[in-house]
Length: 134
Image 1 (tube, one colour):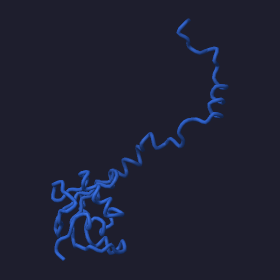
Image 2 (cartoon, rainbow, N blue to C red; image 1 turned 60 degrees about the vertical axis):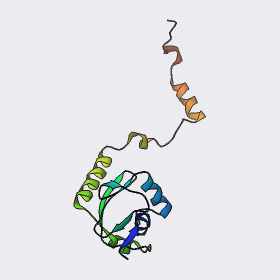
Image 3 (cartoon, rainbow, N blue to C red; image 1 turned 30 degrees about the vertical axis):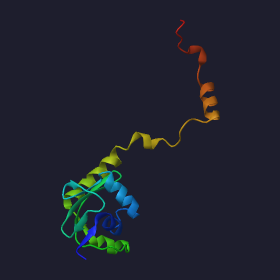
Image 4 (cartoon, helix red, strand yellow; image 1 turned 180 degrees about the horizontal axis):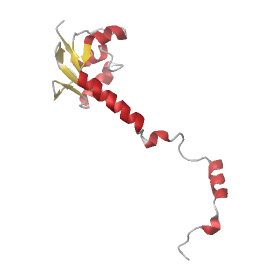
């Protein structure tokens, strides 16, 4: 086998859990082959350079082999090699996320509960509150 549909290859190489997810991500423009956005039916071959974005992680990989069967992870890792620039960029992005995390991720809970609102109201001094009538 020399060529294979890109959605099948991405599924076999374990970039996406299902072929449907791979097709959806390709349709959204998150996968590029040799710098060009493609459709799920596009065939890839050994030597093609793919830019694959999964979540916030973006990888640039070179296709080494083609397989239409989804095997174990060590076997799937043999289907591609990640470029050194991509590895460095991912490491820098991970370090940046570690040093400056997203502020919204620090919120453990959403709205305060009724008890928490009552406790907040008790702690406030309502006599010192600002008023437009003063």
